[in-house]
Image (tube, rainbow, N blue to C red; front, top):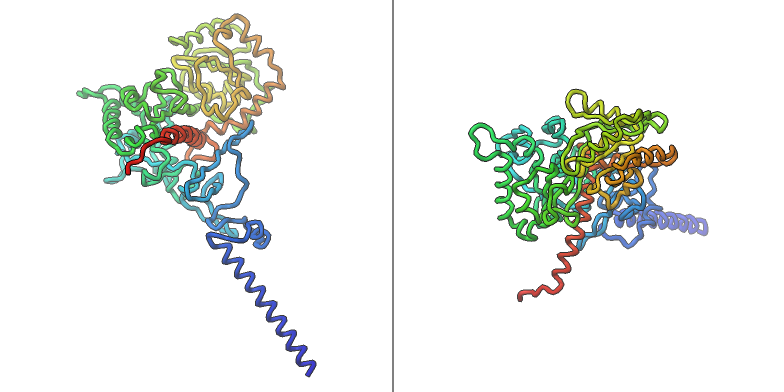
Length: 494
């Protein structure tokens, strides 16, 4: 009798133990996949250990430490995603919404709730954007298929390419709904303008100017001017424009002569520009607008191929138009000061023939590259120098630089006032006085930050497209601050 009792007790103990284990395990899984959990995430991490996968939140996002809002001296710039009203603050991966679970990979379109910016893009007819590239879609088709890069119309090369910013930003917004292409998902296109942080105007204004600003045949108004007039009429009647008077609209006008007819009428919008050289302050200024880098034409030098100090025989390099007007007259003065120096390359050049390849090779063989003001304060030459890891020497007193609120250019560029540069012997003594150790520090920094000035499709984390969206986000933060302050004492209508 006693033996039977003992067997019965053991059986009961085993049964209770197994039941408790199954109960705990089922509770853990139920809580893990519910939207709200009373168990700390750290406990789940300890329980759900899997050596073949990462730990993921219920919404499929990997849990990672929050990046800093503004880095201090770091080259990897990543703004913190905003906390939406009524939403949890979720950190976004640096690549895309890629869910990894138990070794399986699945790509999804970008999640608007976790994006840095929610962007509403007008479905303007193709004549304003890809139609300018000769693209013709099917009937009622507004956009090319971005899932297949082979079907995306290429942007024309040469000098056209340096102002192609609107092309890359438009592609990036279309990319956010392409499930088969991975991108940073910093800016996500939304279909409802009431959900958007900003409104994007997809007008390829630089290409319109470059290709259609002259009259052809019996035209009385050139295509470029006609498109600008149509754009102004379209925007002025939109509820999205009326809401804030266009202040939350992004208009790309990177070529200094683009949007000449419309810029006054659309001046409340946020312009993306190369510089402010041809704009009065009441139309364009740092308070509301963004300076974007040119797309460089010289080949990007991989870090492993970048020549160090003693492998760059040329002290300083400049090749381009020498005789310019207005502020560019300094080029002529510097030419006569430097042209006879054996270790200085200062010659006339253009993109014809082998011009771009030759300039890229020369920059990659030079310690310093001169970026001198021309007809406008900026030029593509600065970004060619960065891509070549040639320390830029900026001689342009009125220049504005891309992303300068988060990048310290003094770490990888030299700045020389125009009045000092044309003083005999000043520039030569300055450059020859810089020792290898200091130059190497700047060269190493150049290699670290060069990717911030790359335009590409698909865009990548921290490249030029991504950096522009982050700059837009910082501007919009300031705009929201102003709007909220104005709303303090707004009388409500009851």
